[in-house]
Image (cartoon, rainbow, N blue to C red):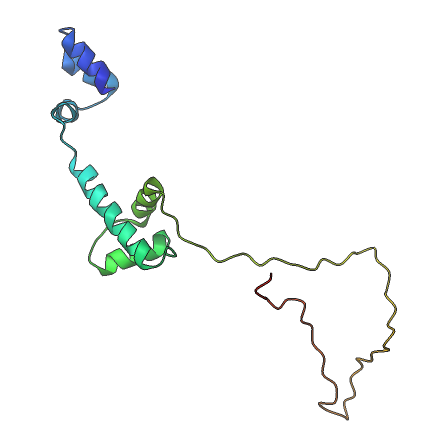
Length: 144
């Protein structure tokens, strides 16, 4: 929109009217023309640097809520959504834990398998701690 206003100004037209049509304040246009950055842009740049520093200090694990807590503890008062917006703009993301993945899915149509070992899992109340059993299907290993 600023190039359009510059073209209007170069064509000896009214800058005020062009700014009104584009719904831009004249002060913002002249600030852009002088090459100055707004206060919010400067604060956002410093905030982004601090966000990246906290994110790197956490080995890339912290997301917006934890970074917000760290910056609040350091005395910086910014909203969590603003921090999340700055993180998105900088391409910074926190790591979330992996979701639980079920590895064994039984076939509902499969028949009962024969038990060649004749295992007996019946409980005898009179004989405590005589039979132990367990299922190691879901033990995580390094192999996956």
